[in-house]
Length: 267
Length: 68
Ligand SMILES: [Zn+2]
Image (cartoon, rainbow over all chains, first blue to last red; front, top):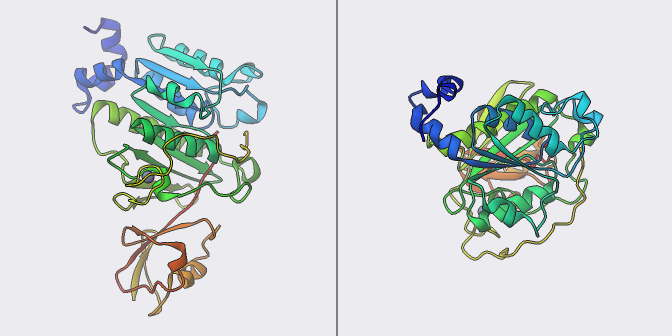
């Protein structure tokens, strides 16, 4: 596949990078990334991945755009209110880069659909807002051996880690099981600074790009935390692998997916 | 003794336990925090007895559920 002149110009700032080059840009253009959640984290990630020329981007969300989303979910605009977020996100991505094949899924991930949804993609990005989804995505990605980026945000804080199943610790290695409902404040209850979603969502997009192009060091075996009040980034080195992990340990007890009980905080 | 807590090296009293450190550092949501000591996860039931030593590296890992 040769680049057109237009592509050479569109992606010239990538191609000039020795870590990306023509080869890396081709990898991006052949890659498929699934973004689960077209919200705070998913918005910046989807916009940058579309601009980067990712070949296929899947976007999964059954929600519709609500006024309270617009403080941070920058892929949606005021005139998108009431539209499916997946459709609104698709329009924004194609507005930036019509070359990208965007597939909008008007559904939430469940134990029934997730394995099939992720099966077609090279990398998954968790942009969800609740623990049942985060644990389900982890378990599905580990069982399917699908590399993915986990992230969470609250108030002025955010964190992320990258999981390569079988090689690096998974989310459940760190956080064994879901906290009980309402034990941990949600963004709806506690608030979140909009730009935090931008910072962490962009870091997830960077991880996806680095994974696809094989560039640099991924956040595998690391949890990167960011506090916007102190402007401290802190990278926590995780134990190698948790041999007792219920999903990626030596004797996993989770081998099939179930829908976890804990009502979502729909933000 | 000097212990590195969440990336910051600070002076602590000899014989400090993980439970005492959690109280001293005003760890939030302490029932749900994951603690690692020198890159090994600690079992919650050992927090009370786990004494810290000079040069130890402690990390607190918190749940963050937001994203949308
Ligand atoms: Zn694990």
